[in-house]
Length: 143
Image 1 (cartoon, rainbow, N blue to C red):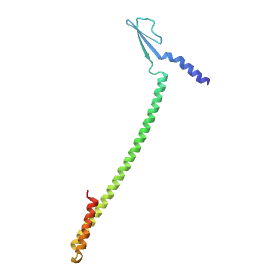
Image 2: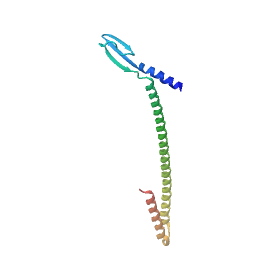
Image 3: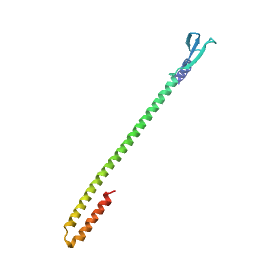
Image 4: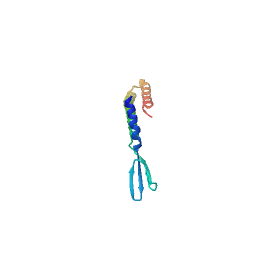
């Protein structure tokens, strides 16, 4: 408790030193931590940009920004992983569809060959089978 009180007291004493006054009288320029005594001079009051409270705010903002950056990076990694999984799933589905179409095309070709070589008695059945194989291929593989 005493340390906290001492820190508050030291901070209160150091706060007035945060302002810098620039006094200009003719060609002579002086800098001071008190206001200019000469009324004819120009007074420029600037504050110390690196004062203790601002530095603390900057550090806090830095910590907050780093946390936000890490959150955004992990979110981006999750989204990229989801996109990658989705892309791989699409690739697998396309390969499966291509394989299925190749199989249906082969069956259609075989059915046509069977219809061409079928005896007269079973030619109608073979042609119907070839037509159905062609329809199945068209419905499944043609857009």
